[in-house]
Length: 406
Ligand code: 2P0
Image (cartoon, rainbow, N blue to C red; front, side, top):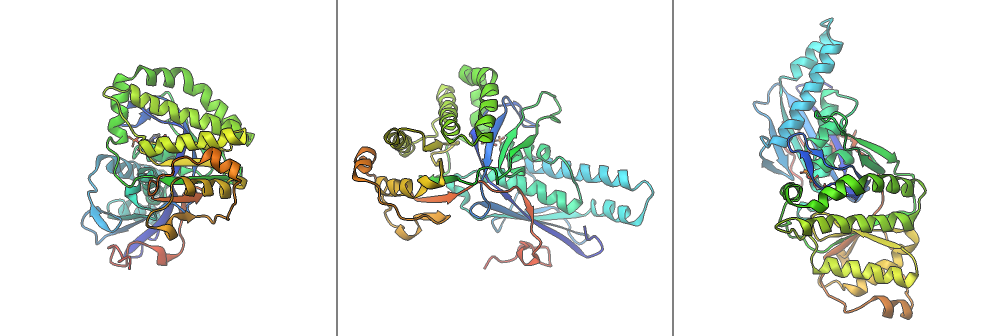
């Protein structure tokens, strides 16, 4: 940390993750402790990432926050929890190192009294319903930790921003172990396999709606915990075994088993939403059409080649191996023909052309629905948070205020 300069600024990036064993329900709202473990795939930051810059200066008069260029409330309790926790760890570390009162530790503890400016932006639309809070809080915690020189276990801090954020602290395949302790010290994320483990795995996101979701995750899971006996049964009796099965399928790169369990767990999560009282509906008619399309495609192929999963919104996230992508993208285009943005319909990794057989098309494509899917984004598993060395990428200028994004 460059405390000698008037302004110390650090910039980092962090990824989005998609759960294949879902987290839904807390046993502690404040510390964000879940009622079951969960497991996710970290998506590649080339396609989806949050970038955050954090700066400290003796000239700053208050802590401030900008999200996607607009000033936001830094007083939000979860953001304050993360900031407080990182500052506490920094203080602990510096006092541990600095009993001798050397000049560097005196500078470090002085900088802890400075105010912080934070600017954060996504390279994807926040409103698209793609898990922006996970990447956002993971990036915030990672960036603050770099700024204050904090090392070690940070997923426990990210968890206090948003549960799913703890899984975005690692790349590849990541489990969030629910833990048992009341203080949450053992409720942490761990990498199950690195992003290089399954090079053929691809992730195709179908953005079916840019509307904001109706019931937020935090409120939705509170009602589910209070009212759904199915959720309780799932958490206690079903998830533990699913966690070990999913880990095994990933380790063995067994796509059929991985895909089938992914779909079943997504369906069970949405079943617990329906079992919530009053019920919560995240899937819409288009989501259901995607489910049916995937099952018709797999049935025609005679095996699970594509798997869907849905979070607290209608967008579909599909897993498949690279040799399936061209054909399945063609099938999606024929099933949901783009209406206005033909050129922008397919984003992310390149997709080749395919000529599916007439037999396949007649078995799989039914009642095309133009305009139902806004766009598709192709990505793959990717790495965890990273420090950005290039100073030209800082979101905060030399004055500590957001640089214009033009
Ligand atoms: C997940 N979801 O495992 C599940 C599946 C949505 C469906 O984690 O209250 O934003 O901040 O801990 O992490 C969304 O919930 O909720 C979520 P909080 P979060 O990815």
